[in-house]
Image 1 (spheres, rainbow, N blue to C red):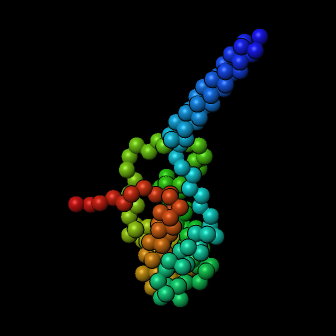
Image 2 (cartoon, helix red, strand yellow; image 1 turned 180 degrees about the vertical axis):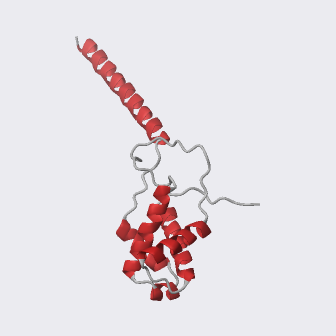
Image 3 (cartoon, rainbow, N blue to C red; image 1 turned 90 degrees about the horizontal axis):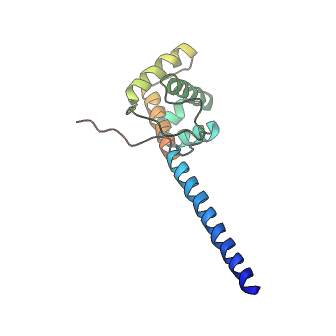
Length: 150
């Protein structure tokens, strides 16, 4: 009788291993197809951008103005389909290359800043904010590689 028990124990161990291997393999495959989660935290983004800015821009922009510019930038991203509403466990379904031109974003932000009453003393401050904000996105893993033009 002990031999039969030993056979059942061995069969149970092998069965458990096979089930675990299948589940782990399936989950690894599923997670490989899902976009990694990049969490945008507004307070962290504002702090990162403020520290990344050159000293001249830091001196000219108030923290409130900086936060408003970052919010406007996020609105621009959303309006251009670069900040989708539903991204949790979403498959990587980007089929075309999306290129963000810092000049386009800076121009948009300058116009919106004027419309919103944000005082911009030097236009280069907005360019610096865009550059720093994109660096934050890169730091949290929210962007792909830079496009090279020929």
